[in-house]
Amino acid sequence: MKIGAIRGVKDILPAEIGKWQEVEFAARETLENHGYREIRIPVFEYTELFARSIGQGTDIIEKEMYTFEDSKGSKISLRPEGTAGVVRAAIEHHLLGPSAINKLYYIGPMFRHERPQKGRYRQFYQIGAELLGTDNPRVDAEVLSMLHLLLQHLGIAGISLELNSLGCKACRPVYRATLQDFLKAAGDALCNDCKRRTDLNPLRVLDCKNPHCREATREAPSVLASLCRECMDHFETVKVTLDELALPYEINERLVRGLDYYTRTTFEFTTHQLGAQNAVAAGGRYDGLVEELGGPATPGIGFALGMERLIALLPDTVGRRDRDVLYLAPLGKAAIDRTPHLLHELRRRGVCAETDYQGKSLKSQMKKADKMRARYVGILGDDELNEGVVLLRNMENKDQQKVPLDKFVEVISTTLSRDHS
RNA sequence: GUGGGUGUAGCUCAGUUGGUUAGAGCGCAAGGUUGUGGCCCUUGAGGUCGGGGGUUCGACUCCCCUCACUCACCCCA
Image (cartoon, rainbow, N blue to C red; front, side):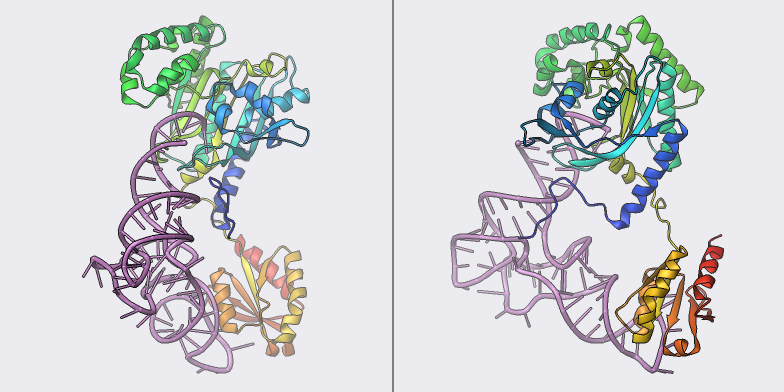
């Protein structure tokens, strides 16, 4: 019986790895230009960390985590998202202080046990950033403009930014109660899921796609109208800053994030090109989270970007960088015996050199060289050996010249670097 | 967890009302003069027709079960 990969995970093969590397490179560049530093944290944590940060009532905690017990009986989970771990690490290593601002980013796999579909995998990769230590609304705008810049650098089009504010611990509970009353009055007009949500997580009802629920909640009380003075001012400054940056956005009062820790600003970068999973990057402010996890009261904001989704949107031109390769074609045993040393010297000089030790015909080797898009082929047969040369063939213009064997490495390395410039 | 769609060669797919040796294109390999790639030609390798059971003289084809993939619900990046 053949063993295949686990359901919902996928192998990223060399054919598409260029895009991944390109995305990672662009992300590091953009994030670091904005003052973020990379942090690498474990892919598993105590289950309780996630339960406390993401929220007990959420699907992620209730049914989507890969949880197991280690040999001592501790409950451990593979991380379903990155924020909890980053905050935990920041607290643990005392990165947080009264006036410290931490800008951290991470790149890595997350795990959720969901039914796989387009743009949704059980192991999926996120690029995430967390900004801890300030609740200044201008940094909310900065996070958004940074994300915008990253998408732009990667040549991604057709993405819109949706924006909302969920209020703080002062005004959100008030709104929640008002909304709950409204939903209870709506009663049977709501789908079964939404009836359940009314008690558990009423805000999520606003996000339901069911047309009947949409209709029933058309007149629902507005989040934005119920914000307290401070939250209203905060949101206003975010918007004004975005306007000054000429960043287009749409207010979506139904934009409710799934994780409990979000406060105030929430946002999603969405597209219509991904089927049902339309969020490419999303996040928001979480001013209560650090304290909730046992750290000093510290506001924060962050986002996560789904790499598979982003890569699905990438133009085909991205990530196709070719190396200049030299293919060495030895003919006969004597030449093959010389090959390892020659290749080693070439590579020591930074030349991308390849061969096939199988002793195939020249024709066959030429085909192979052509297939790997070699720029040059070095032919080394008995004739060349006797003469002390390598026959260097330019695969583009078919020029061939004899190069003395002892000069070969030097000639080819300078030739390739010259071609390159 | 719930629905729909699809499983035939490495890839993309044909396969007629069930009928004997299951095909194509691409890819791969070897040739097409002596040591030279792309185009073209020839030949070749490669398939338990997802798996199991059933109906039948006979199943890739019909029925049941199962598994996988996929899309959607749900949820979310």
